[in-house]
Image 1 (cartoon, each protein chain N blue to C red):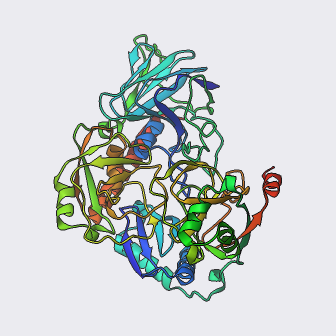
Image 2 (image 1 turned 45 degrees about the vertical axis):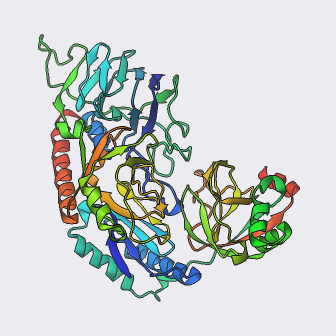
Image 3 (image 1 turned 90 degrees about the vertical axis):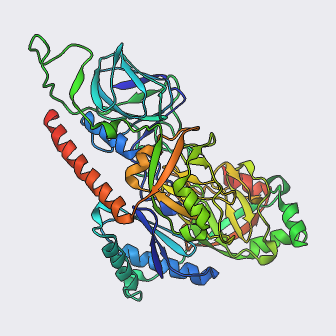
Amino acid sequence: MKMLVQSAGFLSSVQDSGRAGFRSSGVSLGGALDPSAFRVANALVGNDHNAAGIEATLGTLRLRFEDRRLVAWCGGDFSVQIGDEDLPSGHAGLVEKDEELKMTAPSAGGRAWLAVSGGIDVPLVLGSRSTDLRGNFGGYEGRALRDGDALRLFKERRFTNRRPDKNGDLESAVPWISEWSAPAPWASTAHRDSFLRIVKGPDWNRFTPDAQTALITNPFVVTPDSDRMGARLEGPELARVDATDLLSEAVAPGTLQVPPNGKPILLLGDCQTIGGYPKIAHVITVDLPIAAQLWPGDPVRFQEVSLAEAQNLLCAREEDFARFRVGLSLHFE
Amino acid sequence: MQIEPLGDAALLVRVVDNFHLEESLDAVLRATRQLEAAAIPSVIELAPAYTTIGVFFDPTRIGAFDEFRAAIERALQSDSKSARLRAAVETITEVPVCYENEFAPDLDEVARQSGLSSEEVVRLHSNAHYQVSCVGFTPGFPYLTGLPPELATPRRASPRKEIPAGAVAIGGTQTGIYPRKSPGGWNIIGRTPLQLFDVERESPALFHAGDHVRFRRISRDEFDRLSQ
């Protein structure tokens, strides 16, 4: 059975949790820019954490389904309708055969992740179903979705509707919104005034004390030449104490690198594997969901935390997610 | 040897302090094999480059960072003479390159910078022995060391929006090959018909760090034959 792309919107692509294992061949991690929101959406529809879904950018994405599916989405403040009914983020909703799902541009943030029960059936390329948009491989024909594409879906897991309708029937009226939902901070990740927590980078001491102070006290603004590789930021110039050319070395999503013009670039999921610009700091993993919502014109501030705190926050989130999954498992066979 | 965090999910092992062509590369490759052999369960992947190795890990599985750092240090002190760590068979890849004008828009500029004739540039470039110091920038792009010093040419002031797949180019003291159509600022002096990156192959990238490379000058006819 298939899902039909009526309108692909600004930029939509098939993504999963990324293509780890090929960095030494120069292949970016890629995948959903917010792997957490993506994973939560999958959990809500009973999918494996890595089942392929859609990353939507701005709007308007319209999809039609050849059979009945459970869908869920997480991310920016999009407006999503199944037929005429709203589907809030972090909930699962039923889309009937031939019914339309519509995602309209967000009032805050820029990206959302849509999971469909069963997951999208595209070939595994280097172990992943993600679209590498620069490399033109993976996903659906190695490219962004276009109007008229038809995506095959895998068979879904059966789920239990535990909310009988007014007649006491377990098969409820359309549309059907799940009684289960995800915690709001995981499901709605756009912030109007973003604070990103950072740890110092390997090249922190190559920057002047003024630059170090400016990074953690001044606001920066996201510029229009930002994309899935990175968010470019405008703000106080981050000056270096030395001008030595550095050898390229590994970078990662979250790395805050500073080219010679002193304007930092916050690297995101599609960032290249190695880079030669000094790395002043790194956004911690638990804050990458907020980073993935940065949109041109958005303000962003940075706040320093210790490495131990970053790791503790992540371990706590992972424990919460494991409990969330266990809770959801009651609803799926 | 120095280990420093690269955010909360990766770290950088600085294997050597300075870059001295073969010695640095050998040390980085040896350290990479030591880390691979140690098979530390929380390690997801390694990204070697020039003088460093990026170690990507699952932060929820490492315990305290200092303990993990100690495990990495132990792995790097393991007996590097053991059989498992011995270098794999040296790979020498011959890369056919057509240096004809239509594929070499910057050959004249490289010649001008070096004070040599175009013919001499091609002869030097195709007779040298190169080694892959790392693969990056785009999937399969090999950064090659071993460029004859006379041929070093600064990157173009304004990068080209589109460089064709297979373009052989010089950027500073390095030479490299663009695996696919992409933007770039290196000086283009030839083109190879080889496919540098193909997801259908068992090993998608043609080159890996440490591989040896030679260029073989080919005619336009041979380029066309090999392209088929």
